[in-house]
Length: 195
Image 1: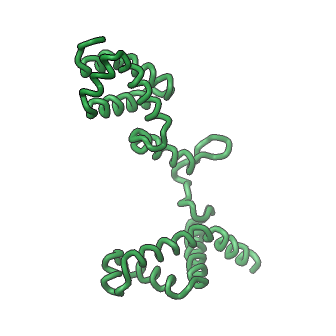
Image 2 (image 1 turned 60 degrees about the vertical axis):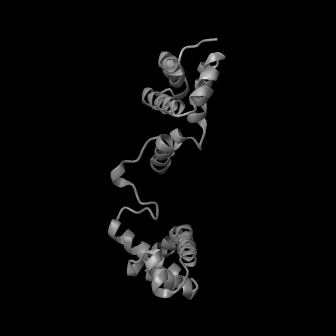
Image 3 (image 1 turned 180 degrees about the horizontal axis):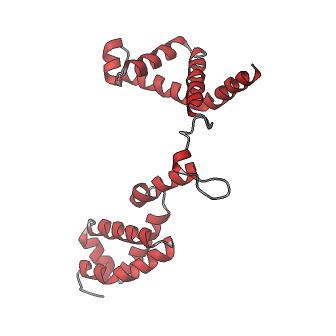
């Protein structure tokens, strides 16, 4: 339909695209970010394909579809660059009533207590207790890795154990500690209250 270059057509569509993005995002900053990212990705695409879409009169709808997918998809570049980070912050620091906790009082997610020194001691004791309950190989490899300050490659060289085996063991121990530290810390706290 039109022999106008696609670059010029995208420039003319920019105000409309910002309005569309604002309707989807409801935030001016997010709308600008998503439009910028979509325009950038379109300009990096094959010009002949875009020109063909434009010549058939579908460029506006193609851009709208790209904006919608960028905003709603959990696998889009926009999501990974902007939304994922803020979702994590929101989920970690939002109270049940929707208000935010102050960043000064945010715990690292291991165990909540007002007294930091006692909290750290309880956490260390909980980790020690949990490690004592593990298989000796897992415990020793984990202790050597963290207390020795080794990288996976250096520990592999020193011990002769494959890097992948070390990685899997460390990952398994970390997961076990993460899943059980709160329960163990509560047991320690309860036992201290009894005395």
